[in-house]
Image (tube, rainbow, N blue to C red; front, side, top):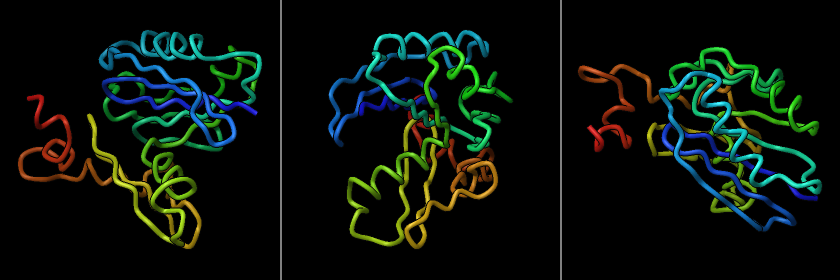
Length: 176
């Protein structure tokens, strides 16, 4: 079976097709993170349309910020200001008619490393993501610890000096 994985960041959106634990195709393009909900959604659809085939059985999307993973609702995507309460799972299911799973991007990264990367021989681990933003996925005793709305590892928005920690410890600092 083929799965489409999407990483929606604050600068780029990336997607890849995975089959038998192998990446078979991938693309990336910049997004207008300051765009409207619909504009950013259309950019996500554009990427998905380029990769999806009839063989794709499910879509998984990692987004930067808080997520109700059960309902597939994105709350306050940190570096995409217009995304305050977006029913992304519903919209993707309506368009593509296959199962869609949404989670915090750092949680997705940590799970990937736990199952396929450096964390696969460990019961507990932390995966740190540094890009436009800063996030952490936490695995404890072989289970993802995501906290309320997948926010357990989202310490980047903690106050620090005159801004917040993420500003000084991610790509934002170097781009300003």
